[in-house]
Image (cartoon, rainbow, N blue to C red; front, top):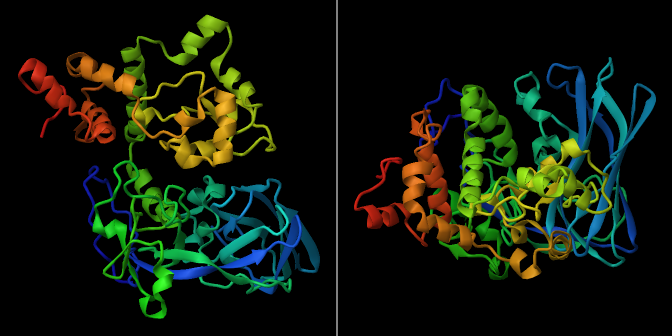
Length: 495
């Protein structure tokens, strides 16, 4: 494949080339508009069976194992639960595996689902009579919409050696089904055994990946709930970068005017509000992050954590409070983390009240209202598993939880439902920051730890830039400082 030159902003000097290149057929700026397939559940529990007569096993990661996988994208009219079971025959022996955890589908939301098993290869290279049973539990007569489902073995050249082995096993469950690298254009009934009636579902936008060339679904009608691609300008929307926000419709000649309803179209291009990354989440995981991570020294890995800790300290300093762990323990004689864990019945809130309990050490304390927008970690914190904590990131609750979940979250945390629907910077803390702007620049950011230069950038600049992004259009801190002192601060670089 011909290598393409991708331009991006300069983050840091790299220590070696990653060695990966992009696809010669797609740029990440193309899309196809297609329709999902719809199925009406006849009962509260629907069993769908998929079968391949045989699958040719492929050894992966030089480990004498092959991976049989199944997955796709589904939207349920009502809340639903999905569980999988896979069975096959190998060298005359029957094997059967059941996914222990159910996948919970939110009402009216697209979800990516999947399941895979590893099989040790002996002499035979074929698995026979491979069947996947997908059981969907929901309300009778509920509509399911389905797209990009496939049942096959994982077979990608880059997975044959050990170069991607470590990355594959890191939070794999967060990246199904797109990390299987399946053909995403198959009909749902390609390997379906059941004789069911499928009708035309809703319009779906499939965006191209500039590395693997696949067209994968994006959630164009609810972009914050991403599917196969991460957002480009989540915090600074609308995205103004044409490369990331506009996608040329490659099948425009096949479409009718009604097929474009509800979409923002300019010059035969679909316009995204937040924009999406050029590469799919799988390629980002394996061929962007994985090659770049070894180039980062231990100090670079601490950058995000250092910035977050600085914001946490800043918020507490402005509010004249201690970190909640110390304050809570002094006041109640109880351990804060354990308090939140028990408050949420030892379960990840997003996984749901019927999910398996998690250990205290597995809990991630989420700020509920994001720290990035100056909200302090306090007794309204949320108990999440590491996977859902990573997914929530700096999202506001309203952008991450369903309405039903917001109601339940309000009941547990004590935060009003109206407040959980808001998406604003913490005004109290912002007002205090403006009031104490001279202290912020001349004392807080002058801390020797924040004045250190890491990878050519002063840490204080990174902290200042994080704040500038979230308060853009509201106030310019450096200008406020100049109004009070007659000069710009020396603790940061003012361009």
